[in-house]
Image (cartoon, rainbow, N blue to C red; front, top):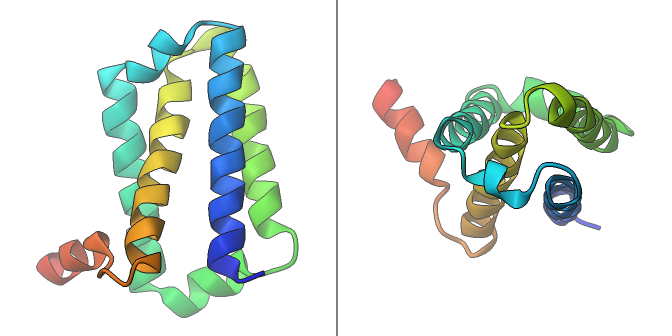
Length: 123
């Protein structure tokens, strides 16, 4: 499986897990917390900027065996803890994954990664 498809499948699975967790515990209304939305998008864009700015280093780590799955497990474990103490953090994870999936969709459709435009502006 191509790494982009694998990452997309992991992100989609994680997104489904997070929404299910929210629905089963605090309700999906928590996922539209404005601070959570803004933070999730910002975190996803920041991570994407790192991957675009330092591709060999970032991908070198990311492509190590088990790292993508371990990262998803870490996000899901953090969400299980967060739902008990700071439920709006679920929105951060959900919107971060949604943002990543939109960026991945652009790349898979052959459209330029929107974050690469931001990177050119920053440089």
